[in-house]
Image (tube, rainbow, N blue to C red; front, side, top):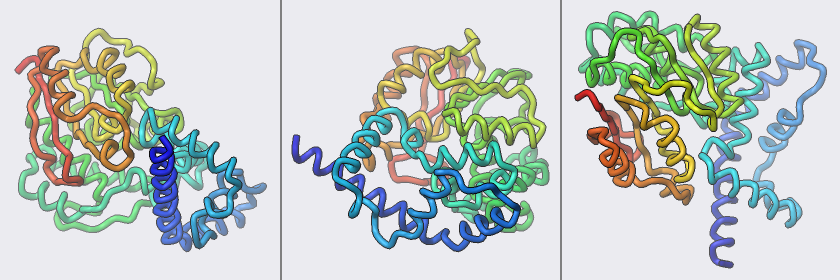
Length: 340
């Protein structure tokens, strides 16, 4: 028991050290933004702002000078939150989502800030672009100019890829996944779609341009959902419905379920709950399944094989492939199709 506590504390300190290093790299950018915000006549910083600036100024993890009791309390909170999902305990990420949803200044810049980017943004621009250029369907390639609209919001760092356009790796990955969905499934007209864990709504926007849907349900945390709603309004995407993570899906059947990483980063308990409430209702499914939460964070989640077996037992005809562009050694693409 003592060994388990020591290992958890050491892991916590390691995670904080990693976050401190990430923040130090983005210090210049964040300082500029805070300075501009002051010039706009802000009436003072929120507690989240102050905590972020204190963290950035530290040259070592603040655990070294926090009272022992506070360290233990924070560690216990971390462990409780981590039981649900990786992003569930990432308070920094959730606070940035909240700011971006409510403050026009942060909405304009959230994807450039480390408080948000560390959780959602990815690199690999060249790899994703090369894959799309080589394998992209004509339908997808004809929409690249429309897809660029997604990266006009949030000020993310982009790269120009001839002849595709100016993109982030994150958006190119959404495009790649959407193209695969179109190739793997024969979706009905105006499908009903569910996404578990939707980031800022990027996958939803790309799919709306390719396969117009009648309803698109999203299960996520409250703060990301507030940001998603703002993004969808800005991009004029209709028929998007954000639901609390524990709410019943108001449909008896859905045409497609999507989850890029998020479902596999939930606790076993939450995964089984999602399966009964949502996944079993999906005729088709597309998931990128990772074991990162087990290997790195020590969470109790369904293994890839356990999830595959659950799908088989419910007659969902699952198939498994390597992730098209490997972002982690244990990642796989899992699909199912009851109609197939």
